[in-house]
Each structure stands twice: as structure tokens, then as C-alpha cells.
Image 1 (tube, rainbow, N blue to C red):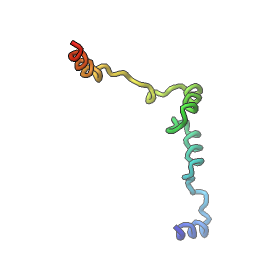
Image 2 (cartoon, rainbow, N blue to C red):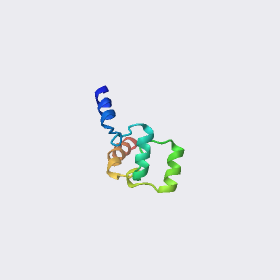
Image 3 (cartoon, rainbow, N blue to C red):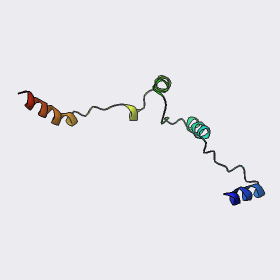
Image 4 (cartoon, rainbow, N blue to C red):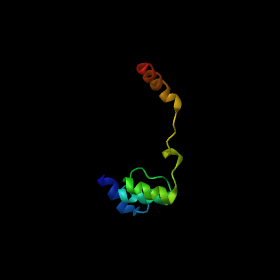
Length: 78
């Protein structure tokens, strides 16, 4: 790591640095307009109000998934 820093200092190659800090990552995400990955419930409410709910966050109800359980519980009660 020291060698890379020394080489960058000698060649003055500071413009190609990538900001891997949380601040840099959030700024990068915000400038691209992609969906955030983690927020508090209140932040999500605000974000959904401003941007809408993306399809990936909407629940889909698959009725076939519950068919097996429905069959089991209907047999037990009879």
C-alpha cells in the first residue's frame, strides 16, 4: 500500500482516486438516482413519498404458495 501511495505521489495521479467512504458511496448512489439499500422506516416513508415505490419493493401475493397451507388447515378443522 505504501508503494502505491508513493507512486501516486510521484506521478501526481490524484485524479483517479476512488472514494470508498460511506459518504462517497451515498453521493455516488444519489447522483445516479438508484434505489437506496438501507434506511430507517421513516426515511423509507419519505423516500417513497418523493420517488414512489419501485416494483422491486412491492409485494406480490402468490396464491399458489398458500394453497398447501389452506389445504392442511381445512383438513384439520373438518
